[in-house]
Length: 289
Image 1: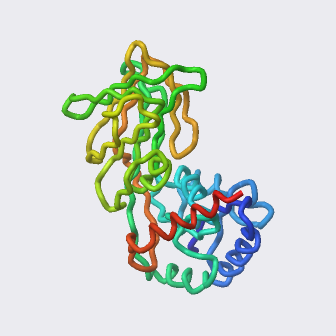
Image 2: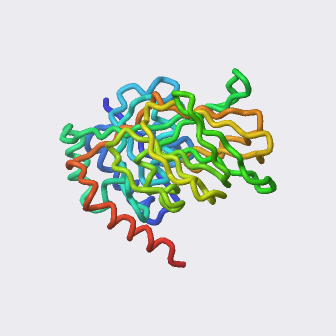
Image 3: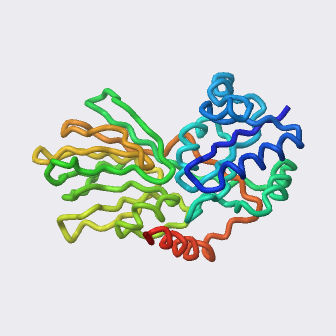
C-alpha cells in the first residue's frame, strides 16, 4: 500500500479543516497517511518517527500544509531520503508552496496518477570546523547566515574561494544564499533575484562598513571558506532561520553544495517570471499590522 506524509502547520488558519479533507481523500484512494508524532494519535494515522526508522517504505511523496517556512522545516526532515514535496500554500507568499487550497482533489489525483514533473532545487551545506575537527554541520535550501553576536563588535571576515583567493568583509554579517533563497533574507539586504535554475551561490553583506563590499554571485561548485581576522568579533550561524550555534574567532566555516537536493512536485511547467512580482506583492501584504 502506498503512503504519503503530511506535514501540517497548525498555526495557519484552516489547516485543521484542510487536513481532515486530505485524510478523507487519501482514505478513499486506499493510501496510508503518515503524520508527525505529535498529532498522529489524534488523527489515527501512522507516526513519522516509526516510518523514518524503517526508511520510509512505500512513501510516494510528502505534503507540506502551510507556507514556505513550513516547507523549509519539512525539508530538514526528509531531504536525505530524496522524497518529493508537494506544497499546499496556506501562507502569504508561496514561492515554494505551489498548490492553493481550492481544487485540491483534482491536483492530488494527477499526482497519484504520476501526471507531474519534478523540479530539483540545489541546497547548501555548512560545516563548522575547529582546525580539522568538524564541530557541527547543517543543510539549507534558502540560506546560511552568519551574524555578529548581540554584544560583539563587527565581524572582520576573510571569504576564501576554491582557488585560494580571498575577499575581506567588514560587516555585521554575511548571507550565503541559493537561487531559491535569493527572494528571502538576501533580497531584504539588497541582494539580487536569481533564477532558481542557475548554478549560483549568492554572498550578500549585512550592514557593510565599506563601500566596496557588494553582493557577489559565484558558481555553486565553489568551496567557500570563511575565516575571522584576529580583531574580529564573534558570531552566530543559522541555516534557513534555525540557529545552529555560536562561532568563535578560531573557527572556520566551510560552505559547499549539499549532497541532498530538494525535489518539488510540479503539476504544470514552472514559469518563474510572471509570478515572482505577484508573490512579492503578496508578501508585502503580510507586513501590514
